[in-house]
Length: 413
Ligand SMILES: *Cc1c(COP(=O)(O)O)cnc(C)c1O
Ligand SMILES: [Zn+2]
Image (cartoon, rainbow, N blue to C red):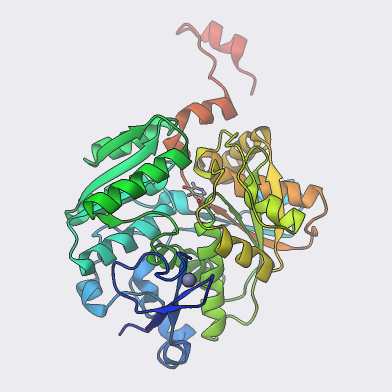
């Protein structure tokens, strides 16, 4: 049973039928939002019926997803990969170090292609199947691309992927191994996005571009369903997440508001929107109480180096509606958060993946959140994707001749 009612434009309110290859509003070009029959969901889903399910993946929450049961038949996910149900760690040592009452780390770097983007790409594959497409295309700073390439490969689709030339090698290597047709564009992410849009228009490929395809966020929101269920539906005060295009934070908010509307949680967390100091157009718009305008892409955190965000309307709505907190972190603070996450939690994050945690630390230090708060920090991607920056965060090992004498000289335990 599919509880989707309609798709509504967030700009002009125009309603659209929720066809599989839906993109932006036909009237004004605005971004669409998928709406559900929450009464129907409420009557067929409860906390206890959820507990009995043995599907430990993002498809566990199928009532809240725009897919038909046929796609989920036999307990197999539409892309074939196991996406979601990542661990939520209670990070007591990290909380102690930061001086925070309760901190949880949601490690989405454990997804099949090692980022939260797998949730969106698995959904893109499900909808491309429904649309009868053969080729799926997207442009990406890296993770949307590598996750699409992996999920599409598993389901037997071809992919055409546009990446800016600065994309880290680990992510490009994933694309090559997954057999994508990769176009590395000599330009910014903005240039890359524009070229992909023109090519998709000309060739008629299925569009997995952030924000343009409204179903992607429906995949991303499953991270919030898991967080809520893993907390036994007792929500924390705050949830921190790093922000680039703004699709992730919008998805996170949609997940919580879905649960709230279906009566599964009784209060909503406040969002902590974390951007890089060198690229923070969304947080700047909140701080200035104005609309956003473009900014340079000046940070090591490539996944959130987005100077022209693709989903600013939904992201700004999410932050404002949740009475959220914004915080911008420096590259140095991001590298430090990578070390702290590794050393207190054993979690290896890429720079954008650690930025959320850097933001929690800074928000505490600046008094933006109180020390008696409870917080979930979402780690959005794995450090293995960007080994160069991991080495920058943690340094090189000591190197010695193979002798005990030399070892005694250098060992500082
Ligand atoms: C894409 C991404 C983000 C940010 O998501 P947006 O939708 O662009 O805001 C954060 N972290 C990682 C690792 C990502 O890949
Ligand atoms: Zn519209």
